[in-house]
Amino acid sequence: MKIVCIGSGNVATHIAQAFTIAGASIVQVWSKQIQHAALLANTVDAAAITDPGAIDQSADLYIIAVKDDAILEMVQALKSVKGLVVHTSGSTPIEVLSPLSSYGVLYPLQTFSKVKELDFKKIPLCIEAKDHDTLEALKNIASRLSPLVYIVNSDKRKILHLAAVFACNFVNHLYTLSEQILKDNALDFDMLRPLIMETAEKVQAELPGHVQTGPAVRKDEQTIERHLGLLQAMPQTKEIYQTLSESIKKTHQ
Amino acid sequence: MKIVCIGSGNVATHIAQAFTIAGASIVQVWSKQIQHAALLANTVDAAAITDPGAIDQSADLYIIAVKDDAILEMVQALKSVKGLVVHTSGSTPIEVLSPLSSYGVLYPLQTFSKVKELDFKKIPLCIEAKDHDTLEALKNIASRLSPLVYIVNSDKRKILHLAAVFACNFVNHLYTLSEQILKDNALDFDMLRPLIMETAEKVQAELPGHVQTGPAVRKDEQTIERHLGLLQAMPQTKEIYQTLSESIKKTHQ
Image (tube, rainbow over all chains, first blue to last red; front, side, top):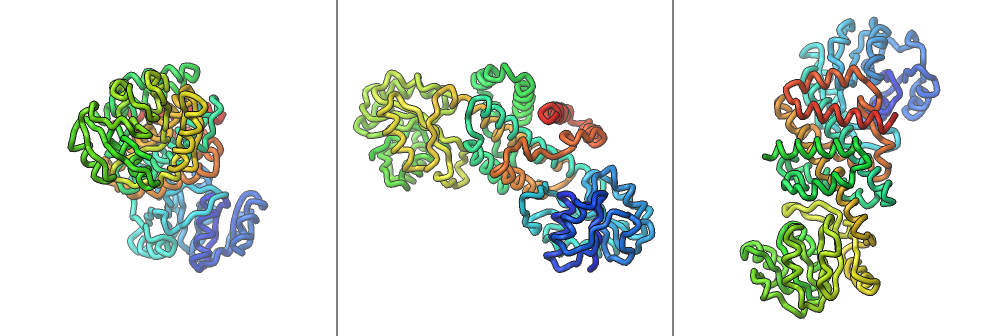
């Protein structure tokens, strides 16, 4: 299988490397900046290109892994290819690809960073395609990367992406706020790391709604008041404490 | 070492079992309800008691692991013992133990549930004591359970407990909100579990402030508006989305 990778960011890097490990051949990596394209291209033995006109027209699969608002531009550049074109965006509907002859979506529900390796076999892949035959073909392709392949339409994919913002982006921000609280008091973030792991591990077997702990679910108003007092100098963090505590009380009343 | 365990909840259970594994002997487990005391006492080969007057006066260590507002009452019951008395509470100052002859605090910075086993050797133990000699003794005792022993006074322990509410209790509530969003749309929480693990694993080596991702840190207002639209029917969850997005923007401006 010959693949062209459009993009060279975190998602592009992890997908291109996973396909290479799975035995596929990345022939080209496109990026606006040649250094970026080259960086990824070198790791997967592909050619680095920056001119959309230079894209190989005979590949089997084109993976668009660029910022959401750059997808449309790449669709224009791929108008005449015959191979399957997929985008990897959680929040972009499949319709953006409708000018193409064969298309679908391959959305990996995971957070990627260039510095950290990932086992692609543990990543849920959400797929959608133009028609039934294309979906079957995409299902086969996705299965080469991970056994966790889910068929998810654009409306449900939007919901998944929204849920992921809560479970990943907002969660990381709460880690950041706890980091700030510790730092302001000369305490080391290392002390919280085991707690963070255990909190995530706990919901791998349980539903989070069943394992809520802490002052808000216990309706321990004394502790809540003491905590709000400690946050006097951090009004925004205090507001988050109040909003989340109210929401916990309502959810578990 | 002879230990009396005051309390039979999650913290009491994990600490008593960890001390047993470390070779200490739990002689008694006290609880208001005999069934609760017996449940833990049976697993560590101790006697179950409910009468504070029946507490063994000759133990080396008394561990108070009851609800915060029940600590004072237990202090009264332990007034005449000569052994070291510790409480395990994050938010209770050491002064509550001052009527006793030898006292300290042993606060395990972790979330405990009865159903899930834990490796105590990975739990940070925050200790504080009446005086220097007692602190040295408590340090030796704590080191039998975990190499991660930190000396933390009552003011800093309060701060740690506050940070833990953000990194654990509030994080679990965000998991719960994502669970609700998925459930309302007939999507399986299983799909988010790998993302939740990876988000926690990422900050084991990095600081969370350095690895923030998502629409708010990208200032991607279009996606934020679409997400708020999807949350129309969940006003409280929508408010949390807005408050956290604002805080992310401010933190990373």
